[in-house]
Amino acid sequence: MQGNSATGCRVLCVASAGGHWVQLQRLRPAWDGCAVTYVTTRAGYEAQVAADAAARGQPAPRIRVVTEASRWQKLKLLRQLAELALILLRTRPQVVVTTGAAPGYFALLLGRRLGARTIWVDSIANAAELSASGARARRHADLWLTQWEHLATPDGPAYAGAVL
Amino acid sequence: MIFLTLGTQLPFDRLVRAVDEWCHARGRDDVFGQIAEPGDAGYRPRHFDWVAHLPPADYGARFAAARLIVAHAGMGSIITAMELGKPIVLMPRRADLAEHRNDHQLATARRFADRPGIHVVPDAAALARTLDRLSDRTGPAPHAVSPFADPRLIEALRSLIRPPRG
Image 1 (cartoon, one colour):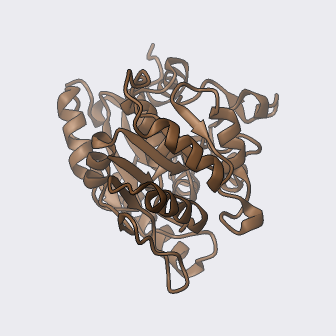
Image 2 (cartoon, chains in turn cyan, brown):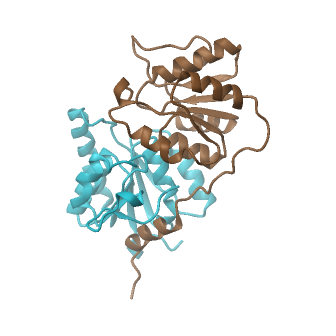
Image 3 (cartoon, rainbow over the protein chains, first blue to last red):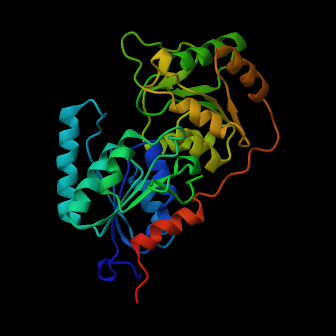
């Protein structure tokens, strides 16, 4: 395979379990050939990720699970932040990609500070307005995207298509 | 088999009760539900088999085996139904009934209501009518969509992930 760290293609792909994760998976050709580490909030996706990589001739991605936290669970959010910091320090990604929500925001914030290029793809569930975490992610994102054309503005977020 | 799924986070008593009452009224025994944690005061179905949570592999197997999906208007449920070519009945969660923190599911349901195989219902009566109409329908399933996002979006990401060298 051409994809390894020598080609400058080490990617951290982050999404909460459930709908955010399903959307992240639909973007996976974007990091074909790269050394990929996935981060989510629930165990059990490993088999599916490994089988898909094998079927598509891709290097086997790694997958890490961090604490699940809603926006009101401050202690769990702190723990999630610390876990993501450790993962970022260990993997040193060149690019961080996320479809949300909280763990994606933290990964972008931390990744930016460690010199990574960062991509926020706001969930397609946010058809009426950008998500709260998406709005906050703006200043940490090199590429700041909405999946709804009517939510795009000249100052961002940009629209470049959707997962569906 | 009909598979009811509410996502991983919040219970949704209005939908669970509506499906339970439909099963009772029609004598159905072919519904299985993943209904999140009902809690002490939450509604527990009596007329179909259910679990609070399913590991991803089991969730995928239940989804693939079902002929019809009933769900909240969550993107995980909608996308999985479209990828597998399953008809899906959606009841959006409402913030005024404390079913979610805002009304984004109403917006989602409106945006996806015209896609093939997607049926949006506002309440229990409409759900029962729709299940009566769809539950024993035979004929072609909706066309399964590609497993990948819009190529434009993938290319936009790829141009930042692997910038052209030179």
